[in-house]
Length: 526
Image (cartoon, rainbow, N blue to C red):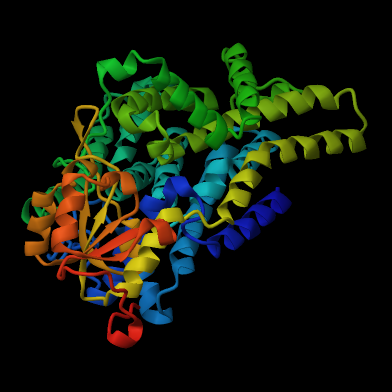
């Protein structure tokens, strides 16, 4: 177990030094989080006013989750200077806290061998590799989420008020970092019904739950006021984006296949899923056992509090959550929404591996059993290795080209309009169309131009608001002969073309023949 943990941590550190744009599915969220961290360090460390760069000519204050992780990163920037790896190592630190909390949980629910395999499954999950060193808040929320589960588990086992307070505080912190973690309330409610029904009527349980909601509610109210005042949002509660599922989505096979695909690949790492099914099946078969039987496989019965009530509660709560946030949970845009599955999956996999190896080990020599266990470990970690390998390749693509082009022709005070293929409304619901990657990589500010607003009037209005450059990474957004192309020909100067580097840049402050200014002429970048 120690060897597995050491290898995974070393690979995670290596991944933290890889390009932040390496894993394409997470580029956008990492860019926004890293931008907020940069702005904290540059503009003051007021944690109540996070700033993005696509807020136009305004300060960029944005409605978002409580920005604990980027704020901590901003602190490190003040000491060591801006280095992206610092934020990614902070994520890794939170992921290790989550692992430590998970170990405390697993060893209270499982015997030693199964608990160690559960911890191995936690480390070897692709989720650990993907989000454990990403510039995103997923590792941060998972740390508080698992701490809440651990605190509540200890309350169930020891019935001490301090552990209920612990669970409430960790739940509050998790909900601050990501409100989607509030489904843990359903986990806890179902868990206490399944495992300790006699405590359901205790007022202290409901008082703790209400107290856990105070800080998140106050933050969400404040964050909504930022959106109302400055017009920028990640689509948390006040609009700008919809994460909710719908009846048509729930009736679509793609919804179920999408969720199953994400869980199978990025939580269970393919091989873990059948082992988890075996583990849950074994627990269900032995749910009536009053005490664990003897034997390497049978000794997975109840230890203090059985893991089966927690797994059942988690399955119920996650199902409700995946349906509620179905617009993202079932697509590649919301793979990170599944990070909460990791502790439940790891426990089930740990039980399954313990059962399987217990049966196989009875027929093998010790050396052969060790070899089989090593093979199981390698198979469990294979998909995580694939995530690691993909993370070493810079996938910035056209975003990188546009950032380089914008940096070459502008100065930091210039405002830019960066086009995006996202629309303001997708499938009939409001959509977060803002594209942060170019703004972050070029260290510029300005506006995102959604695909359905590429019109002369829209671009002219942004020019009047102070935009100096228009950056387009997809030539189909400005088709030759179209209204916007004709307007740009008369009112702007082309500085870069898509034929040169995949990105087009127009100077909105001048018209006439093309001219590419050099740094010597005063257009230099960072």
